[in-house]
Length: 92
Image (cartoon, rainbow, N blue to C red; front, side):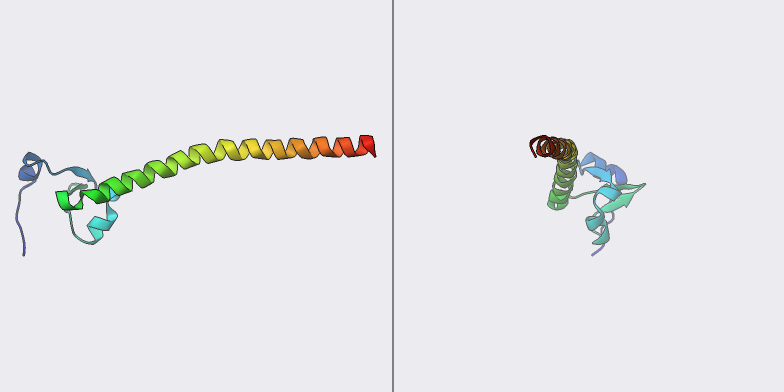
């Protein structure tokens, strides 16, 4: 079945628009209306937007947490090795 609905109607009825690149799975399955680089997502498919945004924010947060912690652990390990080697030569 083919539906013909105008761009203005989609905006008036409150169908959310997102960049089409943020919902590639829905674009691939042809579950959204595309116009000028925007995807208009019907209510039954909006969970995809939520999941995608959650995944993006989680990845960014983990990167922020991981990198400083990794650098801190790396510095501690280097300092620990230097201290152990100095102690071993002074004692032995």
